[in-house]
Length: 273
Image 1 (cartoon, rainbow, N blue to C red):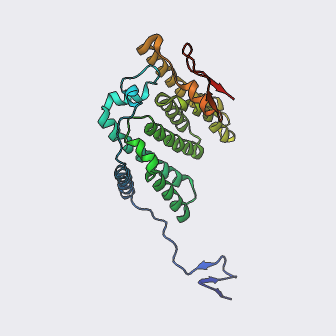
Image 2 (image 1 turned 90 degrees about the vertical axis):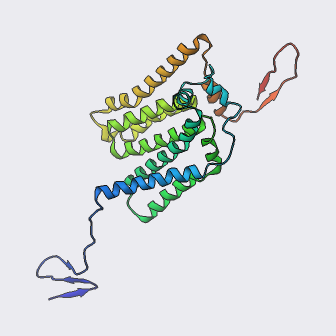
Image 3 (image 1 turned 45 degrees about the vertical axis):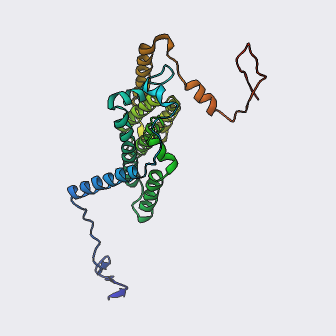
C-alpha cells in the first residue's frame, strides 16, 4: 500500500518514509572562499568607519596630558601615542574599532542559531556602532575614549567566545583585554569584577578545572595592572597618581555638588548632599 502525502511517499510495509524532494545541500564554500569573504567584509568595515569620521579637531584640552604623559594618567595611551606617533595613532583608532566590531559580529554569528533574523540583527548592531556620529568623533581625537571602546568591544567578543567554548585560552584572552583596558583608562578596573562572574556562568562545565580557570581569568589582568602601575611610578616617582578613585566616586551615584561661599584664604569647597 502506498500513501501519498505532499511530496512524500509512505511505504508502511517497507519501512520509514522516503522523500521525493531534493535534499538540501549541506556543502559549504571552500575554506579559501570563506576566508576571502571575511577579509573583504573586514576591509569594508574599516573603510566605512574611516569614511564616517567627522571633521573635528584632533587635539582637545586633555590631549596634552596624554602626549606629555602627565602623572595622573595611566601609561597605556601615552605609550600608544609614543609608539605610533600622534597622526598614525589617530589614524589607527577607527581601524582598531571597526575590526573589533567585525570580530564581535563573527563571534555572535557563531554563537547564535543560524538564521536570517540573527544575521540582520548582528548587521544592524554593526552598522549602528560604526555609523553613530557621537561615537565616531572620538576616533579622530587624541583621547582615550576610542581605545577604551575598542577594548570593551574586544572584551565582549571574548566573553561570548568563552561562554561558547569554556576554554582556558578564552579566559586568558579576556583577562589580558581587561589588563590592557585598565592600562588605557583606570575606570576599566571595574571589569575585574566581571571575570569571576564570567566563570560562574560556566561553573558546571568547568568541573575539575575551576581553580585553574579562576587563575587564568585573574592573574594576567592583575599582572598587567601591577606592571602598568609600577612603570608609571618608576617614570614619575612620588608624583605618580591616578584618577581611578575620582572615576569610581563620580560613577557611584547621582551627585549634586554646590559651591560653598568663596573665600580668599581657602580653596573653593564643595558641599555634597
